[in-house]
Amino acid sequence: MSVRIAIIGGTGVYDPNILTDITEEKVDTPFGSIKVKVGNYQGKRVAFMARHGEDHSVAPHLINYRANIYGLRMLGVKNIFATAAVGSLNPDMKPKDFVFIDQFLDFTKSRAQTFVEQGVIHLDMTDPYCPRLRQVLCDAAQKQGLPYHRTGTYVCMEGPRFETPAEIRMLSQLGGDVVGMTSVPEVVLAREAEICYATIVMVTNFAAGISPDRLSHQEVVDVMDENVHNLRGLVMEAISRVDEQADCSCQHLPQDPSAVK
Ligand code: HPA
Image (cartoon, rainbow, N blue to C red; front, top):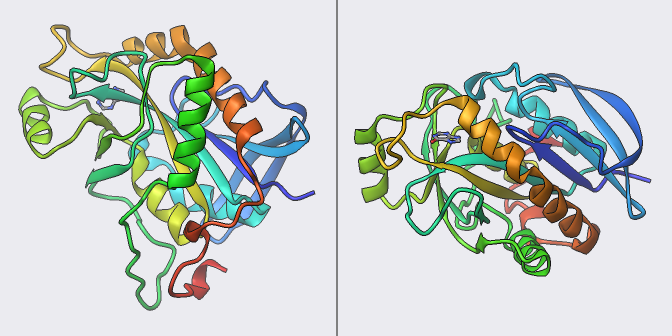
């Protein structure tokens, strides 16, 4: 049975233990090898990948996003739920709230954003995050009684440093709601690979200059740990609700990037 669903676990989410009968798979892609755990949940095959490695050793700007997404595609994955810790620029989006982001602003600087190295494809990014999967997440959060926002604009920074307060003021004026370091190019590559992709963003802190305190990675990890049971419940509810065989426009690019096949 092929694997149709994948979870990409961000900061604080390294544990695939919602799955049973877990095996580790190594997948060799043209962009490098990846390791994923594959298991079962309620009769569905689910792949789990720790974005930063199992020991959080890979910084956001050094993640091999192309190998990760290409490898999931090779496994047959058609639906990705990614998790991400973020800082909030929006007073309504508070620590421990979930945001099912629908837009991004890209401030990354050094990351490969396409699989296509010969020829050009210009991807439509009107709906970068799959509206069908975002609806599944809203329904799941509603069912679980969790605080959530059905839309939000994610600002992707290069990192690995946190932002200055001046950057946060600028990003806020540009319309950003939350800030993180990983959604781009992951979301872009997923679309290029014709995989539906949505992100479960969890706010861990108010961003620099909004929070009265200095930021630390430990604070992000601590808040994530305090809320990881809710995140796990949300992921389990979403997996059980998602129609893994559903056809969706994300899975059909207007052009056919042969390099991704
Ligand atoms: N900035 C960038 N990335 C983050 C933050 C932040 O404040 N919190 C968690 N990830």
